[in-house]
Structures are given as C-alpha cells and as structure tokens.
Image 1: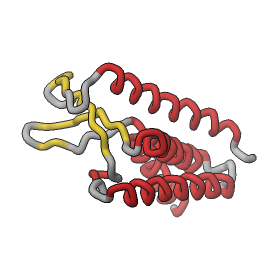
Image 2 (image 1 turned 135 degrees about the horizontal axis):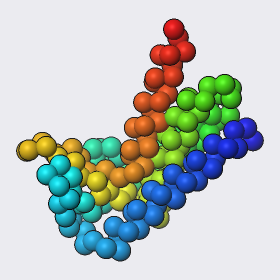
Image 3 (image 1 turned 45 degrees about the vertical axis):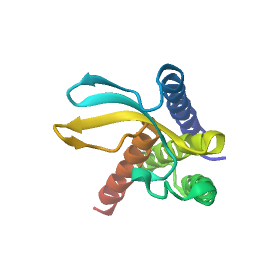
Length: 154
C-alpha cells in the first residue's frame, strides 16, 4: 500500500472526530446549546441526512443509501490516493483529509443511523448549519485538492 505515512494522518483525524463526538454525546442533551462567544455555540444535534440535512426525511431507505454512498466515496478516495504520485503532497493531504471526514461520518451512520453535529457558527441572525470536525476535514480536503490542481496547471 502506497502513502503509508498519510494513513497516520487519517487515523489521527478520524480519532479526533470520534473523540469530540463522544464528548458531546456524553455531556449534552440532544438539542442543548451553549454559547461560547457571539459567533460560536456548541449545539448537540443528530443529522439523519447528508450535508445541510439533505435526504433527512428518507427513512431507512435514505439511511441505507447515505451509508452506501459514504462507503463508495471512501473506497473511491482510497483508490484515487493510491494512484496519486508521491510528489503531489498537497493533493495527498487533501485526499486523506477528505477520506478522514468521509470515514468519520460513515462511522456515525453505521453505528447510530445519523451523524453527530455540534459546531454552531453564527453572525447576527445568520446561522450556518451545525457541523462537526469530519465535515471540516471534508471542506479542508476539497480546498487542498482544488488548490493543488490550480497550482499544477500553471
């Protein structure tokens, strides 16, 4: 298996995601919110859908579909990363951040049937949908990959 050093990053990220989710499950009641500052609250929620709660009303068929998509995306990212040459370090970091986020949320879906969210960002009356570390890893991974492609094309 290529890129073994990146799997350590993957392990650290997935464990940090799962650890933070366990803290909120053990310390908060579902729906409980605690303001940290004017822009951040900890709000413990269950998301039965995908990003922005898409497909949240899909019942057990939706849950199985989202679980299947999570598995396929994770396998595809592993395959893609194995095909990526070692010289593309930023792209590999992006791929493994993306994989870490996908697997972190996959674990939730497999264990609970929903994803645990707790980061609640807001400015005045604008509230971003509540998310978790895995979602952040997905965002960071995609950003790293996009940036790598632009810098490689120049």
